[in-house]
Length: 266
Image 1 (spheres, rainbow, N blue to C red):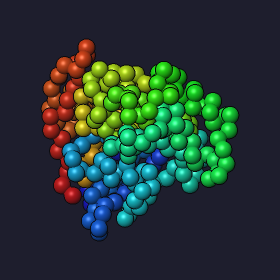
Image 2 (cartoon, one colour; image 1 turned 180 degrees about the vertical axis):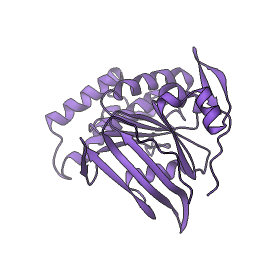
Image 3 (spheres, rainbow, N blue to C red; image 1 turned 45 degrees about the vertical axis):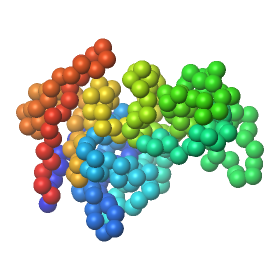
């Protein structure tokens, strides 16, 4: 059986732990023998080719599909729990921009699970929304309909919806797919601030942005190979993984890009 390289040296408390996991669709596994330890305040970048299993892994973490083998465990301050509060920013937003809903209402909808179906939102709920709007820099847009927003503004509103419930983990699937480069820097600045209090899992095909901003990397292509922060370097990749890299300009800073990543044959 293929055994993956798996790092057990993290000092922070685990918040999600995946062990020997297989998952897929219609009796065909997409993920094979996945092992991953995600810790509190981690900023994990998940990269890999289309069809490699990145979205499947996210769905397993969110509980949208069940693994065919192995297990996923959740922890709260080191104590095993049945589940944790997670915020999710999907790759393709499901909001109809023609629907007459304001930025404020979009973010408020992120608190729907914190109240019963027929009860009203409390003052505390509205205060959370106001604080989130301020954090997202959307004060002047709070009353605007979402159809009037730019891609970057809508992204901030949807990110606000994902974090307003104070989740322990935020999962973002290709968050910069519908924003331009002007807003990309703002997005990662926001994520850096959010990461001071929460774990972030970022799925992206933009390897340059991932390498420049995250703390640790999981490369998913059927299997998973984990790259701790202090090992994401040209020397480590070329020596350990035989994956040559190149430097490319990205904004004001260069970043490293993986040229090729060979996963072992299953």
